[in-house]
Length: 121
Image (cartoon, rainbow, N blue to C red; front, side, top):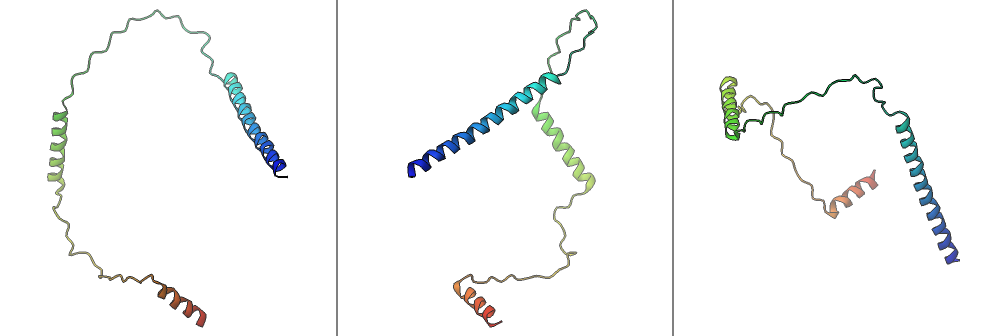
């Protein structure tokens, strides 16, 4: 009995895995076929152009990291002078009240009291 169940489980597993891989192969073949059908066709009448010699690009000038950093810092300092950034925000204009948050002890007594209160209702 146990051996038959084990064999049946193996058969079902094998059939399931086989179907999954068969489906993957079908999808792969479908993608391949659609790629072949809808592939962009090169222009059939390409104009005959003589090859042109292209000059090698000039080597870029060496980058001075320190100069870039100094320029960025100078821009930030200049913008701070224009915008007038305050050193500290002013808190006098904020309206509201101070609220104290109390904690409730999550011990067993809290659950007992809640259960009793629910039973009384």
